[in-house]
Image (tube, rainbow, N blue to C red; front, top):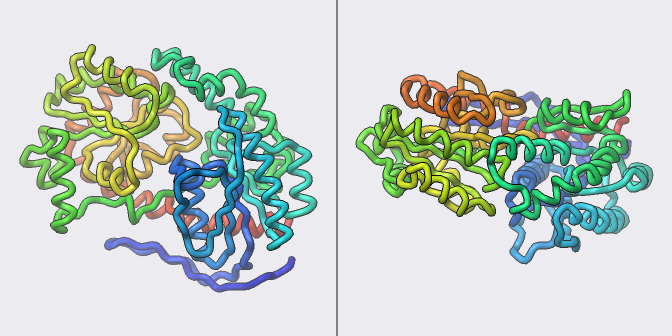
Length: 450
């Protein structure tokens, strides 16, 4: 192995109540090329993960170059992280192949200027064929491919959502493209798992998907690393801090969820604030959530629901809320900054996540990090993160069971208080970018040794 640099690291992540330390370890410093179709200002799930993971790897002394798609807005800078932008065809699904070709050209040039030690691809948003993976492995270095869900899984999730009358797929060009072309683009995911030195699934559920639908080779080397969240941004409210308290009060007042108990942070409020976050597309299950609201309001008439997300279904959801007679209790907000979103998370009493399909699902972890329990579907991968100690579960697509789970949670304020504490601890113990940087660092090292 060509040892470019060595460093001794002691990692530490802490809060006011707990600190985690790892012993000193010897690390080879590397130049890591991350090939990601999303990167800020594209703050999608993959974009956010790559931004934070790259930053934490750079903090550990590595040189990180991100190759991503061009964007008109400015990309935020991070010390030790370089960003290369490449052209791409602005067409649903097809952009992954267009971007992939341009990213490969950029990767070749980068390697000539500054040799790359390991290539980290973020599937499925980069489409390379087997020949291209072979070329990278032979001429540049080992490829570590992160499996962020699958196109087949996306398609099946949309079909499941359609059976539960979420939304017509044809209304969204991106959803329609996935439905019609998922099988075609799945061949690039197949190339990714056969052409990479190591695959990394973002959940056991995703790993099982690839084993079921893609039939990897017998010697397939695949690890599972669940992504973490930024626990410094997504944190509980501090009611003793005046600025924090005033911001919290403003959120509660804005949505009409501001009785006396709520304003001082007590869980036994009669105006509970329910929060759902996710793109306004069929597979996120927002229509199922709205169908559950009349039953929730019968038991908790002061409850308010805030849905945050961008997408084509906003008018559909608002019309549905009006038809159900719950328009007064429902607010739909567009996407917002992480700081503003985090304020909503820590101001809510309960986060509801009714998604029909996820590769992992970061929203529940962001909620737990914020000290807010989560009610979500009783199926993987969400059950890998959420159980009765930190929230509640309901049958996928069942509004009556969703209502039952939310009502059970709201009826037990003391339990929710305990769940809030345990949820925050779970994130700090298992789901942080500090953990992710350590895990990927070890995977890169193993890929180079292999």
